[in-house]
Every structure is written in C-alpha cells, then in structure tokens.
Length: 304
Image 1: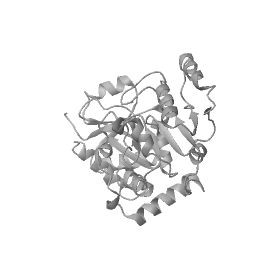
Image 2: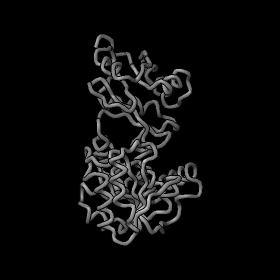
Image 3: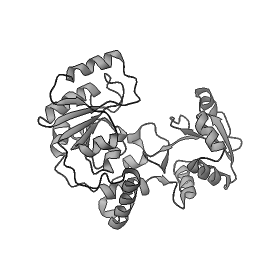
Image 4: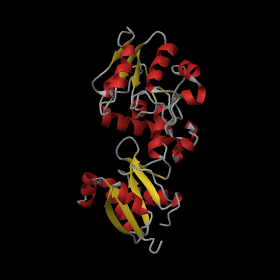
C-alpha cells in the first residue's frame, strides 16, 4: 500500500452522480470526514471489474451493498431506514457487529427511547403503529427463490408457508409476495398448492397497512420484520439476520417454541429501536456523524 491516504468509493451510476453533485447527505458527510483526515477521495463505478481491481490500488476501498473481499475494503449500506447507515466488513447480516451484541433493555434510557420511536413513527407512518395489535391473521412476507433453501434459512420459503399452517392452526394466513422479485413459472406453480386453502390469501397493497392489520409477521429475514418493530408487531424469523434479538427465531429455538412464544412476551420495541438504530448505526441526521464514520472504520482496522 504505497499511499494509504486514498479512499475509493464504488457506487452505481445514478448514486455516484448524486454524490459527485453534492446531492447525498450521508456520502457528503463521509467524504468530508475522510478529507479532513488528509485523504484524497475518488468515486468509481460499482462494477465487478472495478471492485476486483480495488485490491491492487493504493489506499482503502468502500463498496456499497457489495461484499468486501480484501482487508482494505469495507461495505457501506443503509440500516433499513434513512438516515441510519452502517459500515461493515462481514458478508452476512448475522455476522454484523450489532448481531453479535447482547441487547439489554435496562441499559437504554426509557424516555430517550420513547421520544425517538414516537418521532420516527410519526414521521414515517403518521397515525399508524401506536395502538396495541388486534389483528386476526399472520402476514407471511416472502422474498425470492421460493424453492431454494438459501444460506441461513431453516427451510425453503414454500416449506415455510406450510410450517405456518401447521404451527398456527386458527389464524388466517396472508402471503405477501415481494413486488420486485421476478418469480419463475416453477415458483408460481408451487404457490398454487395454497390457492384452494380457505385459510390462505395472497395480499397486495401497502406493506405498512398489511403490517398494521396483522397479528404477527413470519418471514425468512425480510426487512418487513424490521418495519414491523416500528408498528409494535412481533415476528417469527426462519432465517438469520442482524435484528434477531427480540424476535422469535426458528433457527435458534425451533418452530414449535417460536410460534408458542410469539404472543406471550412483552417486547420493549421502543428501547430496541433506539438501541439498534441510534446506538449501533450512524445517524446522518445528527451532529457527530462524521466522527462516527471514522470510528467505525477504525474499529474495522483502517488507519484513519
């Protein structure tokens, strides 16, 4: 590393142009933070060839939504909602630093947590999410590759729907397909198994409305379960994820126990959201974000 005071940031075309034009708050703060430490910052295309060449370049490499593959590369991505960001070296979400920590609600100030959650709930949801849950159905939030058991998943997504019907024998089950997933003919054919089941329907419409109307969420590791936290909605996870601490996990406890526990606990939603977002990510909307960015990189081995 001939000159380590260089930072290359790899971004897709539209985002790269916004950053170059000064139209992106977080990356503007990030660039300013590194320049204040004497770094020369370059914006590069987020292509496979460019990322592969990063290992031979001087300085450090910051990818966006890509796995870091050498010890001078890190990944930066949104932490589920603006303006919260994180910088990581791991490939899988269950390996992120927050995933390895223990959440202790007694260490979180209750007043701070309530104010924080009330503010973001109002800002993002209006009048939604504040009331106690009175839904009568399960929302099953689907992702992609319905016939495959992927990394960290307890079973395939199709098998997950079957398991919901076994473990919860009374509630209606609303299956929400991912609006941006290009499902194959084989996957759509597999879903036909549930079309004649009177307890199953395929939901559409606004995801926050679907969350508001359900009793609880089931998913592999979709961000829908994280959105549900803002609406006081518990979830059963069939896959590994970083926000597992207060949710039920089939991988951790088995399906029977996870479903048995789903409505039997008092969950400190506000304290958890404050701990996860305000205490364990970079809030680009608050003072001190630049130093948090640099500290994150230092913790992950960069000399900044």
